[in-house]
Each structure stands twice: as structure tokens, then as C-alpha cells.
Amino acid sequence: MLTLGDPEHIGYDPTLIYFPSIPQQISSQNTSPSTIQVASTMYNIVDRIFFSFLICGRATSCWHVRLNNEHYVVKDSWTCVNWVSREEDILRKIQDLKGVPQLVAAWTVEIGGSDDGTHLHRESIFPSDDVQIHRRLVMRPVATPLSNFNSICELLSVFIDVLDTHMTLIMQYFILHRDISDNNLMIYPCNIPKGKTKQRRKVEASSSERCLRDDKGSQDDDRDSHAESRHSDAVDIGKEETHEQKLRRWDQERCQQIQAGILCNGLLIDFDYATKLDQSQPRVLTAGDRT
Image (cartoon, rainbow, N blue to C red; front, top):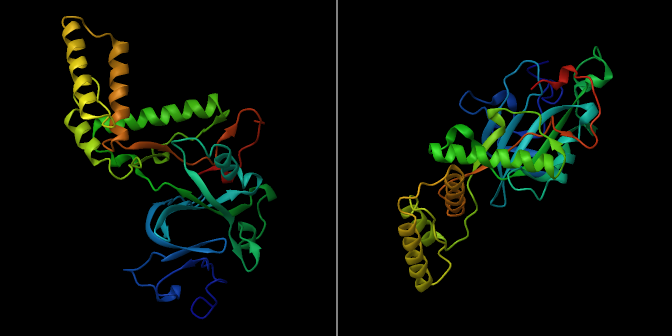
């Protein structure tokens, strides 16, 4: 059966295409799929970003994929049937918020014309509300783990971005994330328009200055601004900077360096457990609530 049976019938996912195409022929050197299906679209897999090795969980895997030279992330997981569209609904609600994934597509995996779920692969020995549904979300941008920070300054900057995102989620969207984990904090580069290299070099050279100047103005304006800054510094000689002023100055410099591409942005991901505070209702956790 395992040797001659249909791969779909013995547990292989037909929406993940391997090379070689027959799973039984996959060698130890080539154990990753080459394409992954979301609805009617096939995405080329670039790399695997994350894979959960828990025995009892949602078998979450995240893939860096490409389609028509555009890069995305596909999140593949098994979600409790009672809140199968929770993350999709929340991402659509906060789609204009910076610092969170932007949803591109959502799909319930179909096997043989039916929605894929644990009820298709095992007998119903558990309650019906413990059924897990196979879901895929396509999102952007492609980010890297928090551990890839380049400096302490960048790490602190990413933490600030994520804290700002948490505050905006609560104050503006009435959403509580509820799943604080280092796996859910990511780093991604700011999108720098072409022609900004001059500004980047200027910011790098002036990162230790009190206020980094924007390069959009003319050279005369820049000279006047620097002269005014030096005059202000001369006036403030001997006057100790307060803690609030230091924080304000550091935040200005941080924002300038992010815009110049020196520091990366922070990205808050994984809204499977998020709660809408304006609609929250008590619910009993089930076995499927573990990651």
C-alpha cells in the first residue's frame, strides 16, 4: 500500500509539488517542495522560513515564495474549525496598519474537492469542535527572524516598532494580539525608493549628530540648516539635556535612519489568537489551541 498506493491516499499533500514530482523518489538531499498551491495559483518556493516540530499543535509552516518576480510568505497551518477565518478577518480589518502583515490571499486547502481537515484523515474520536481545518494565507512583506538584528540600536528600534503596533491595535482597532513570542517578532527592511542612496550615505555619516537633516532640500538650505544647528548647540553648551529630550532626539534619529534604510522595521505576525476587544466572548480552550 505504501509503495504502490496513490500519494494522496497515504497522506501526501497534492497541493505541494516536489521535484522529483513523485514523493517516494525524493532523496535525502531534496526534501523541500518546489511549488505550493493557494486557490488556483501556484507559487514557486524560494525557502522555508519556519516549521513547527511540535507533536500536538497546528503544524504551522511558513514559506518564502515568488510569483512573477514578486515575493510573498505563505503560512500553512491547521486551524480550529470554530475560528477558521479569525486571522484572515483580523488582517483584513488592519490592512492599512504599518508593522503587520498585509494579506494577499486566503484559502482553505481542498483535497478531492472537499475542504481538507483532520476529520478526513482520522476517525471522529474527538469532539466536533476539535476538528482542525487546513488553511493557507498569502502575505507580504517577507521578513527575517528577530535574531538577525545587526546592532543593539536596531534591536531596540524593532522592539519600539512592535510596541507601537500593539498600542495602535488596542487603541484604534480594539484588537489584543495575545501571543507574545520571539517567533512572532520579525525584521524587514524599509522600502527605499530608487535615488535615495545619497540620503543614506548622508545619514550614515551623520548618525551621531543631534538631528539628521533631510536631503530633499537644496545645498544652500542644508548649509543654512547646519549653521543654525551649530548656533543652537553653542547656545546650549553647559545646559544638560533632560531625559525626555534625549528620548525625543533618539527617536528622531531612529526614524531618520529607518527612512534611510540603515535600520530595519519591526513586524508583528501571527494573529491566530488575537481577540477583538469590542466583540470578545469567553471561550473554552481546546486541544487545537496549542502551537
